[in-house]
Length: 533
Image (tube, rainbow, N blue to C red; front, top):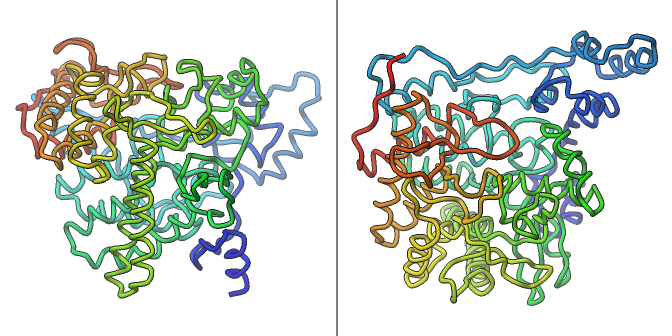
């Protein structure tokens, strides 16, 4: 109890007993220090994530002692040292024998088996955070779960009748929240310093839709713990101040931003971050923090976060109050109000209902651009809207923040600026970053379709049909689904997306999930057939 009281003081009144956690395991970049930096800068592995996921074959202290003793010796080979002291992670590649004439939905059904991982065994010194239940990974280089990916993957699991596996996915995330006080970006130690868009309450909604409202009471402690993480330090802030994920505005309103507790290069993209810092005219720790916060956004990276609109070195994520994140927080507060009512705690129910209402009003006041007819992000330091036209404008519709009039205006803005032959593009700008034009992403299509449908707008059907056709076109040509698509090309043209820090990944968890759910809700196309193996 004493520990809880200390935490309550530190967290500014937002703490709950669930936040009394053991210290986080350190990421490999901290554990191995100069050795880690040397390996990544030497490009021992083509993908920087490989060494972050490698498994040490001896205690780190032993490896570091050996490194100190050997690195200055004539003929020392860093590559040979790494081979002798680390086991390279085994990636289960997304490959299988296609059936002749296989349809998209049959492919998705097969891929659930390929992407399935069993409960983890604890491996000494590994960066992997073990999970207690089976789970689905995205595919490709991503051999762990990712936070917001999980919700969109679950849509397909529910549609395909794999309800036990969907339940397991929620259990796994709840277990991580219980262990660490929040759901990290993914289940790796180097992801613990940040989270991702908070979709846990949406996952609870999905299970409750099937199993009834009692699910909210089951997961109430985890939902509250996550909320406390995102709001940590809020009530101690003075107007105009910020702490971690929370910003207190001049009028006293709390809103949220993306953040990362570390200000060093990311373990999984170490060299890329170091190279970016060399080009930037700003302190490296500041840049690293904004790069990490951009990774927490899930939109890594996008012109939304770039001060000049196109150059990564100007990334300014921590200065921005994102409209999508705050819509997600509104939903979390609304779900907590409902869960507390079910639990008979009317005091907490009223508190969270009021917080949701206050946040909704702040989103409308600060992030609604009446002239453009869309929702946009807000820079809390300059006190101005960013006016970056992006698919984030549909998220307030998905979470019932928008009024009917606002939803109608957003429909017009989407048709004017984002609607393309293959669905909606992420932004208007092609910066070479993957969360910009010409790319479209499954989660954004789903939130757009569901968002417009909730307001009775026929644009939902249009977007669904175009996205389904784009995925089908690529599948008919390549026989696989991928993480992102080029939605700007005409029907029948090149369909796969590009840009970003790594090669296009196939699989792909959230694309499969959204395609399965969307084709069931909007059977606009008959479904493509894969090419012959």
